[in-house]
Image 1 (cartoon, one colour):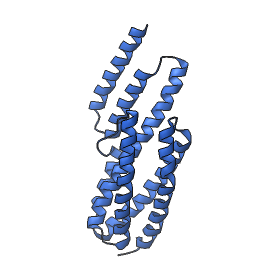
Image 2: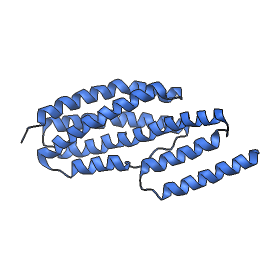
Image 3: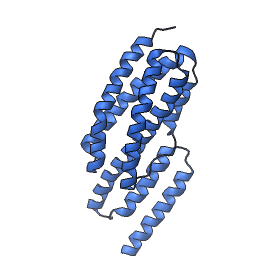
Image 4: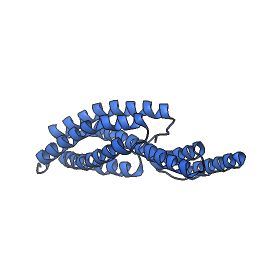
Length: 200
């Protein structure tokens, strides 16, 4: 029975890895690999299923957070260099500094927990990056700050949820630590977006 379960887990892992290789979305690739590892490390019982669901929630949070953190740094770097407004450039520089630090903590935590993280922006975040950097002048700053409001609204929601629902105490602590930082970023983005909204 154990051998059969091991064979099934191995087959699932190989299938998932093959499927991931056919996907261009780095976040989906990482999460599929994590789910395969979660499958292999939990038993085929009701208790095992509950544990796997909890592990899948944790790893999905981590993979999405990693892509979001990369977006903040990559987009912030672009706007800090090419932005036309003091507000846009200031906010972008702050995002690069704060999220570089948070990304390093996330990577360290993922390594400790054997969680695979995406190596590039997920498709959704890549679209945001392309949309913002495809604009020029003040319009780029305006679009950037509008996107940062939306992005941080989602971040606050997702990190708050993880601070409550994450099953791993270290992941829960990481999410909890980031919530007030993200709330501050959201308030900054809202204020600066309003300041440049009608600027020519």
